[in-house]
Amino acid sequence: MGSTDGIVILAGSGYAAEVASICAALGLPVRVIAGTSSALTAATALGLEAISWTGDIAALPPGPVAITGGDGAERHTLRVRLADAGRQTTTLIHPEATVGLAVEFGIGCIVSPGARITSNVVVGPGTLINTGAVLSHDDRVGRDVTISPSVTICGGVTINDEAWIAAGATILPGISIGTGSIVGAGAVVTKDVPAGITVAGVPAKPR
Image (cartoon, rainbow, N blue to C red):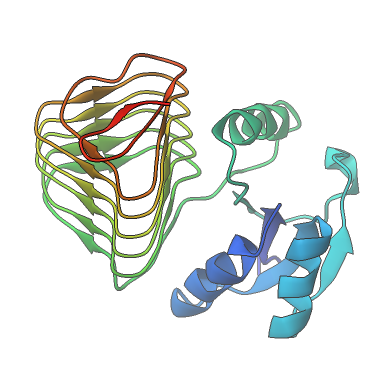
């Protein structure tokens, strides 16, 4: 990163403020927060520069880009567009996250403080791992997955691309979560979840 560059945070929600805090903890300057009105509000509260952004890659200032939107499909599309334009997407891991042996992260991942990733875990590009989430041994997480605060993912779990695991959910060992599926807040997943559905409850059932 050049001496005049800082992180460009692309945001669709107040999560941008958390990502700015991760940058601060890593000693990385934030150049600008670009995005929707809620993201701009977050930037203003933190005293950071903010710009309204409607999707024009050329309009972004220089610097590595952190994509923070909650929708996995949108994150994937945006990351591809940035790459096609020659822009770098950065991975940010808070120093208070715990990362064990043989853990691999794809480009564009963001890991919040208090997250714990134990050992032999693979996390695909663009995945967000929020505060207090736990990923256990031998987990395989696809690209652009959203793992919300206080989620517990037991060992040997597979979470496929663009799935969304809501706050406080628990996924038991060896379970597979299908592409694009949503696991509701506080759910306990005891069986495999097919692609493209929403499950919720204890035990989790389709909704």
